[in-house]
Image (cartoon, rainbow, N blue to C red):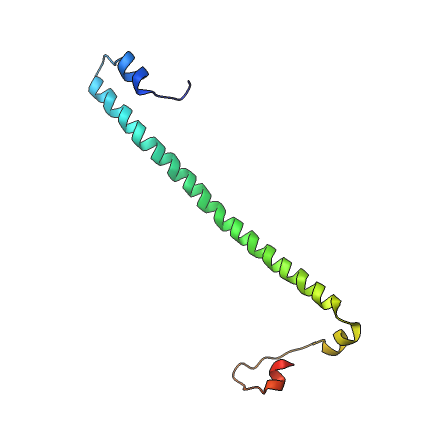
Length: 104
């Protein structure tokens, strides 16, 4: 088959006639290092794709959260939505709030 190097076909049935030791050395070197190099390339491609997949997944999660919150808000009665609408909010992180202010 194309692209295959079988030990029996290459080295036993048709032994090399010119520099057989060098031929054997490069044959085994090729057999060891080429799979390692290909696996490293595949791992590098997979790692590069993971960051893109994570960023798009994070955006999809945020979009789903927004859609769910909109669904929940639309389920409230209109009068309740108008009473609880907040147009502006200022947060003071070092100010201690009462329980009533924390809830509202």
